[in-house]
Amino acid sequence: MIKRPDVPTHARALIGMGVGALSPSLAPVFIDLSGTSPGTASYLRCALTLPLLALLCAPERRKEGSPGARHLVLAALAGALFAGDMLLWTAAIGEVGAGLSTVLVNVQVVLVPLLAWLVDGERVARRFLFLLRRGGLSGQIRQTYLVVTASAALVSLGAGALWSGVTYAPGWAALGWLAGASLTSGVIGWLLVAVHSPRLASHVGAVLLLLTPVGALVFGAVALGERPTPLQLAGCALLLASGYFAVRTPATKEA
Image (cartoon, rainbow, N blue to C red; front, side):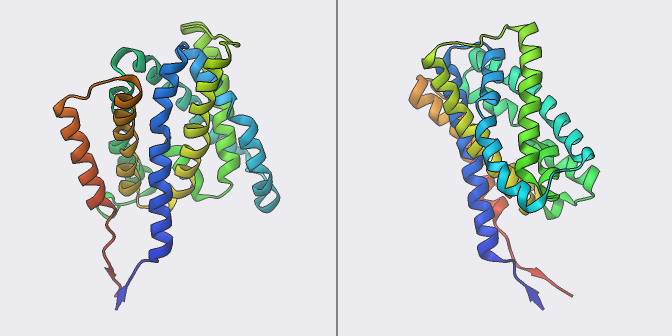
C-alpha cells in the first residue's frame, strides 16, 4: 500500500518555514543601518520583541496552560546560547558584511540534523536553534519562545555591557531600524521557524534555513551596496538547488 503525505499540511509547513527563513534576511541590513554596537543591537532587538510576543502568548496560555519548570529551564538555556550567537554575529556584520556574516552563522544546517540524530534518534537519511525546535514538539511554542527571547535579552545586556557597551537610548532612527530587525527576525521569522520546523524533517528545515543567508546576501547588495563575488553567487545558486531537491517529498511505502 502506498502512503502519501498530507500534501496541504506539508505545503503549509514548507511555505511557513520558507517565509520564516527569509524574514530574518532583513535583520542584518537593519542592524548595519542602525549603526549601534553589538551589545546595543542584540539587547534592544530582543527587548523590543517582548511586548508583542507577550500579547501573542495570551491565547496559547489559556488554551494549553503554562510550560513546566524543566521546559522553562531549557528555554532559558536556549536564550543564553542565542544571545552569544547574536553578539558575535552582530559584530561580524561590521567586519565582513551582512551577507557573508549570515552565511557563516548558518553553519547550523550541518549541526541541526546531527543533533537530531544524536539526541532524538532521528535518522538523518530520512530527514535558532536545535533547542527551540525540540521545544516546538511539546507545544506551548509561543510561551517557550518568549522565555528564549527574554533570556537572550538579559544575557545580551550583561555580556554586551562588559564587551562593547550598551546604549539604552541610541536615537529614534536607530530604534526604528532595530524595531524592524525585531519584527522581521524576532517575531515573524523565528516564530514561524519555531512553529513549522517540528512539522518538517530536520534536514529539510535546516536546508530551508539557508534561505536566510541567501536573502541577506541579496538584501545587503541592494540596500548596503555590498558586492557578492561570483563564487558567492554560485554558492547561492547551489544552496537554492539543494533546497529544492531536499524539500521534495516522495511517497513512502507502507508494509
